[in-house]
Image (cartoon, rainbow, N blue to C red; front, side, top):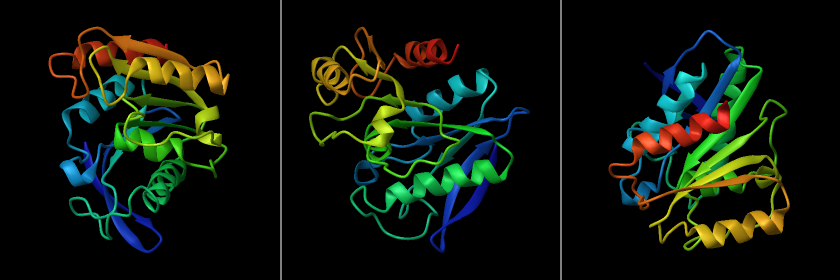
Length: 200
């Protein structure tokens, strides 16, 4: 695991990079920074572990204003640029395929992207906070392969996510982990297995 810094609009952002000898990479985005979310979050770490087992180079980033990342929180607006800068960094490292994956707030930020680079082939969202934040049609949602939530998650209710996917008609799958709430305590193994199944 390497602690790195990369540029976004003149701001130095920090990340955790775990290289793998393949051309596949993934950017993983953390939960809400105003509630303590960062790239060290245990759910984010579990997500990275699942991708790494499938041969991906993983890049967990701290959004602007979090940890040692420069800049200030921007309510999910400029944070979209942070995601794209992280994806570009992986492309610069030689990745020809870059997936995107986010947890909670990070999932919402990814869902709002409109200018996706060609290298982004698929998106996996964990606990998208649809009960708290708007999820509107977007190019990013068109590339979602899967959404994952817990049966006890009242911030990412399965029924609302299922309706969203039905409305999008994208063919994306919804996985509901029995017993898991929004924080996946004692359910990170199930989360890893779920992500791995979508990457098979």
